[in-house]
Length: 76
Image 1 (cartoon, one colour):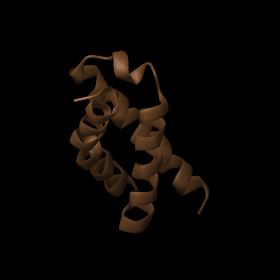
Image 2 (cartoon, helix red, strand yellow):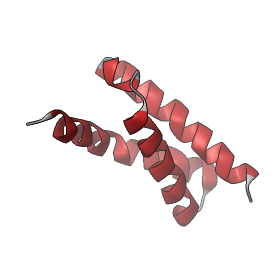
Image 3 (cartoon, rainbow, N blue to C red):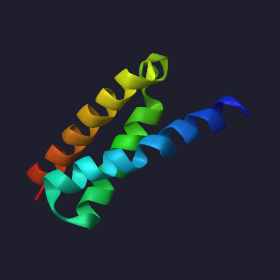
Image 4 (cartoon, rainbow, N blue to C red):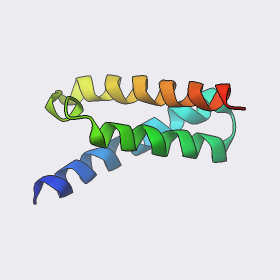
């Protein structure tokens, strides 16, 4: 498995968690999906994210999901 495939697998493994954080904060599936997508793209581009241990990655996912959900709330 190449590096890209490994990164995609990691993002797939946290996608549900990321989306659930966004839905919990936004209470609207379409907007939550948009926030989660943005958060996952941010994480993909974040070189530091890929150096974290698995337990730290989950915290990073939560922080990024909250950040993107808050952005969605502000833009309403």
